[in-house]
Length: 443
Image (cartoon, rainbow, N blue to C red; front, side, top):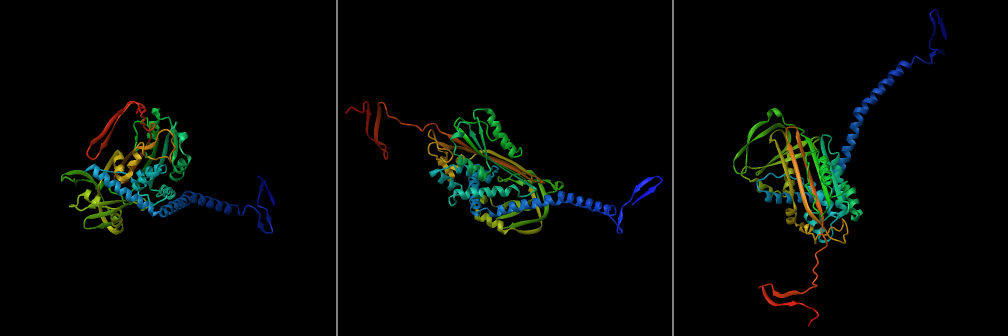
């Protein structure tokens, strides 16, 4: 219906059967649309990310709980054995390592070991009861479980294989495939004679550790054809943070009996705690309370090295089980920063049973590459780690570098010229016979 006015023509909603066909519902519909749009936007900002985060947590937790305890126990036994060997080697010096970084780098290398070398590495790494397929599968689960462990905790794991460009065509593809699939490893080929390669390797580690470890190698020796590297970074905020205003200078008792001034942090709250005859243990959690620092404080009359020497995996787990909730526990902890390494682990690992892997002509790393000229061996295992603990939380990083060397042709002993010889009783050192041969055909 059109109604004319002097001012012009105005259009009004058409009425049919007593109902407005358009216009009367436009405002409510627009209002509903606006509310719906706001709700969708709100959900996109708040609910969807939280839903996605919960899914990520669920996936990470499922992988963590599914990791075969046989691998976890093996890594724990190796960790305590290695740490005790370092304690014996270092005396009263601070020690800080990442057992996971070391075992991961060696587990990647283990994929290329064969024969007695493989047996020795399995014994040292406590992997003798596990098949290689199980080891690789469970490392994949373990690494995957740490990737989304906690939104408030950063854990970065980097694995890489660096190949000398002349050596790369000789490397077994199944070895590289296992490293890529199970360890999410990067395969990188470089000219080892080019100084830029050192910068590339150190830059990779620097990036993976968020700038905490800037250098793992200084030179590349001519015999090196491959590096197997793990980098691990951790940053987590305390669930119950320390109040900076309460940090005070206090005495810290050294093993020799002297004291030094430290910045002692202080907080109180709900923690899990155990007090035994010889030790106190407290659990300080990070983020969503799935990852925590455990502090073991031996009684004053118990030397720390003596306590650590007796801290087997079984005793360690017993202490963890004995922790119980305490609603208002006061915790005082010194701020500290430790940088450990680069520590060469060759001697320690040789003592732990895998010495054959370091022997140039006896090592069997044929799973990496089948060599007709020369032999592959572990030239060195270097480890570096750093940690800083303050009122907000903890930042830690570690890198492990396994250098793989290639011998020249095995030494040969060709007796093709005049020679001297003797027959000797090695019990007494008595020489029974001796002679010289100028011409073997001469009788």
